[in-house]
Length: 456
Ligand SMILES: [Zn+2]
Figure 1: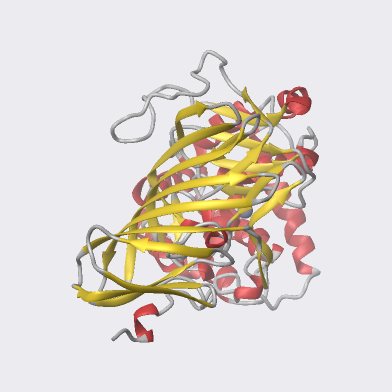
Figure 2 (figure 1 turned 135 degrees about the horizontal axis):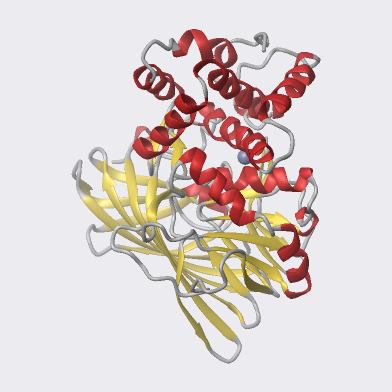
């Protein structure tokens, strides 16, 4: 019989989510969604590998009803729902290392999941849908093994009302319009954690942000992913028609931002980049793999909007291609993305990173110095100090080693760990190994492992 130890959670920050008993290698999601009734009918085919002998396994799924679970590889005995979990039991134990596939049908009215980080997951907009998965929103719309270290490839087939565009991660491979419904198929071949999986639905037009001669919809697919050498990264915005003009104006320098970041961080890791502009005001933008989502209020040429657009773009390298294996190390995403804001400011001819660092340090010095950003605790993982102090730590490193060594380090970090999972100890070891003579712990430890703010 199954035992609860088979569902042991991998992360103390999200103890209710994820399982170390197996991993998912591929998610094939087929979704039918009706906007007027917020009705989702889903089919998820998961290809998995057992990490131990399994009598049952637990998937994360919240607020939706499972109607059927079948398999062509194992004999399913039963399935039941229990407090945000779908528990599938097998007739015969699945051996350690075995590959298995589950075909899960589910349905319901998806809704955000409330927690200590507010509401996350599937959310209805005024006229469409937004999915904000970080950190535990994925189970609001598909059954999954919800943890940042669990990276998988995805295929999304989304059927929704005609007149709307469904945007998912990866590359659009087909679009089939019938009278009242349109089906959109996306493939995300580069590995992706569950929290970055997304579907955005709205009355969106596609606008090219760089050379309009770039293929707009159907991009050639390359065997190894990525894009042809020397070719600019295709960049688009998905915008409501009424905002197309504002989008072109406020994203007019986006291609320069991309070029500046490729120089600093190395090649953009995915085949394309898309900015979804929701027809609503959003409190904060958010990143997903191969795309970001901003609100109509972020279409602004001022620094406050531009820094957020830079921040989300930088997450494609830091967070999406190179992902923390555990939430406590989230500064590896947010500190880097925040530092990227300052780098874009500098590259665009505005305030230097040094000046941003000075004023930010001054401001942080006036705030409580009780947060250890290398392990801030679940409730404070999105605290602004994780972001800003993480950026200051990187600036301290840059100041100590010089620009050539610093940017060389960032480029080799993204090259070596692209599509992988990392921790803070990995980063410190990498700094020490890459920059001989640099004691990473002595230099960065006070920023990461103590509450008191080090001198600038
Ligand atoms: Zn961020």
